[in-house]
Structures are given as C-alpha cells and as structure tokens.
Amino acid sequence: MTEAPSNSSNEKKHRFFNSRSAYAGIILLGIVSLMGDTVYEGSRGLVPDYLKFLGASAVIVGLVGGFGDFLGYALRLVSGVLADTTRAYWFFIFIGYGLIGTIPLLGFANIWEIAIIFVLLERIGKALRSPARDTVLSVIGKKVGAGKAFGVHELLDQVGAVAGPLLVAFLMFSSSNDYQLTFTFLLLPFLMLLIFLSYTYRRIGSQPIAETKAAGDAKGKALGKPFYIYTFAVMINTIGLIPVALILFRASTILEPERLQWMVPLIYVLIQGVDAVFALLAGYAYDKYGVKFLTLPFIISVLPSVFAMVNTGLTALVIAAALFGIVLGMQESIYRAAVSAFTPIASRGTAYGIFNTAYGAGYLISGAIFGILIDVNAPFVATVIFVVITQATATIALLQTSQKSKDQTTP
Image (cartoon, rainbow, N blue to C red; front, top):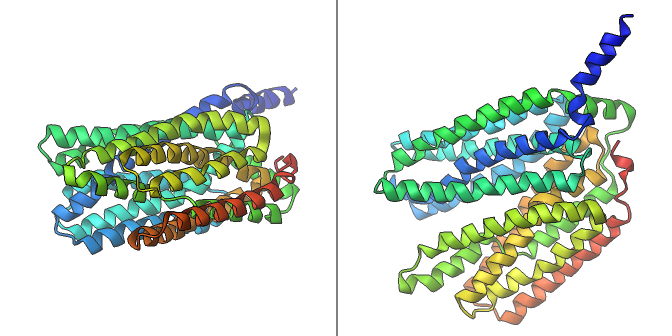
C-alpha cells in the first residue's frame, strides 16, 4: 500500500526526462547562456578600449586577452575532472555563471590592475561552468538527440553573442562613451541570468547527477581511444582554421585608410548571426547522420582561411567571415555533441575538459601560425598547402572514429 505513492512520487520527480518537456530544460539552459553572453560577449569588444582608457599599454592589453583565453580553456581540464569526481555539477555551474558578475563591476574599477582581475575572474568562471554544463546538457539531450540539444543551446547562446555587442555599442553611443554607465547597466541581464539559472535548477533537479552516478556504478570511467582520436581530429581541424581575430585584423587594415573601422564590429556580428543559424541546422543533421556528418565542416574549414588570405579586398574577407560563422556554429554545437558519442556519462565532465583544452590549444597554435603567415606576407600558395594538409589530416582522423561512435558508451 505504501509503494504506490512512492512510485508515483518518483515518476513525478523524473517526469522532466520522460516527456517532451526535456526541450524546456534545453531552452532554459540556452536562455541562461544567452544572458551570460549578453554580458560577457558584450563586454569583450569594449574591454581592450577600457583598459587603454585606464592607462594600460598595448602589451598589457594583449597579454590579458591571451592569458584570459588560455585560462578559459586550460582550467576546463581541472574543472571537468573535479565535476566528475564530486558529481557537484550544479555547484560548478552556479559558481561559473556567478563569476560573470565581475563584468558589471568593471565600471567601478579606477585602475587597470583591478579591471584585469575582474576580466580574468570572468574567464575562470567560463572554465568552471563549461564542462559541468555540457555534461548536464548531454544527459538531457539524449532524450531528444544530442545534436538538437546542443544546436538549440548554441542558437540561443549566439542570440546573446549578437545582442550583447549591439547593446554595448548602443549604450556607449547614447551615453557619449560613459564606460561606468555601460558596464553597470550589464547588471540587469546578469540578474536575469541568475533568475533563469535558479529556475532551471528547480526544473531539472539532481536527475543528471543521479544518472552519472548510476553510470559510474554500472561501468568503468575510462575514456577510450576513439575519444582521443576524435579530440585530435578536432584540434588539427582548429589549427588549420584562421581565427576570427585575424579575419577582423585584416579587415581593419583594409578599412583604416578610409576611416571605416566602425564596420569591423559589423563583420563580427555577421559571424555570430551565421553561427546561430547553422548551429541549429547542423544539430538536426548530426542526429540524422551521426559523427560522419562532421566531415562537412572539416572540409568547409578550408574556405575561410583561403578567402581571408587571398588579398583581394574586403569582399573576400566578408565571405571568409560568413564561412567562418558556418564552421563556428558547427564547432560550438555538433563538435560538442559528438563528445557524448565517445564517452560514458560517468566521465563526461573529464571528457569535455580534455576536449575543450585541446580545442583551445588548436586556436592558440592557429593564431600563431596564421599571424606569422600574415606578418611575413607569405605566398598565398603556402597558405593553401598548409590549410589543405591540416584539414585532410583532420578528416582522415575523423573518419577513423565515425565507425566507432555507437551508443554503447551512452546508457
């Protein structure tokens, strides 16, 4: 007599993951990321200028940007392992998103040294939350398809990535470049982020953690060879793709003589907009065709670098930016979704930490190589050879893993 209420209560507790309302959790997590991107992506275009305003040199600004991105990727390995070890996924998610609150505080930083601390804390927050959030998203996503889950999440994420810079530009324009007012205003989307995050936790509860514990009891936690081959393939793919910063750098060089630098942020908005659309489309395609679908963005990755380095003017750079947006949308959605095809749930935080660290290392190497090619004015054919070799290598490695990406690793 006492078992029926217990079973009913248990079914009610887990109804979220047994019905179409799983989409609601994915959308809620996407809205959280949307609000987060509105704050920190909005600030990223203004922070270098603000540090300069506070008296920081170009070297300091460059070091802060590079070191911040390094922390944002490298620490994910540590946070991913800790999340899997403690199963405290939501703790890392709350702390990670909470550190975005350092961005509105930038308006009260009177010296660049304090401002730098706030900037780096936000990057550390990114590292703390990403593996844990992606693990929770992958658990929810298996009910509707990992590709769709990460695609919808990335679409909403990119809405914030577009809205944030536009909002900051409007605030700076309307306030006659009042840095303090602009940064302080970002407190509003940050508070909305916290509200949506709290509500999302109430809706999802501890079920993803329970599933990772059950998976840990049922099978080993080791990450197999296919996962490492896949991660290697993505890193090589990233090494052969020119970073967005250098696309914008080349655009700035072309526009500077005509005093049209204000167009450079619009190119960045184009990238983010294309990213959002193709992230969602790629998510649905990935769920239908599996890991082998990733050969498409690997092949397309040849084109942004070629168009960006061809030296034929602004039109080629705009085309490069649009193509880069296509690849970026797939990187941020189905590249992440594919990790779940190679990893058991119990080790997924660790897997995302390793994956994201390799991904960041790829862009670090890419920036150095393409930067040198630009500085030495290397022959165009040298760029083409480098890009084709790297993407061919990446594609071959990917094809080796596509036959092994079955669901036996995902309970």
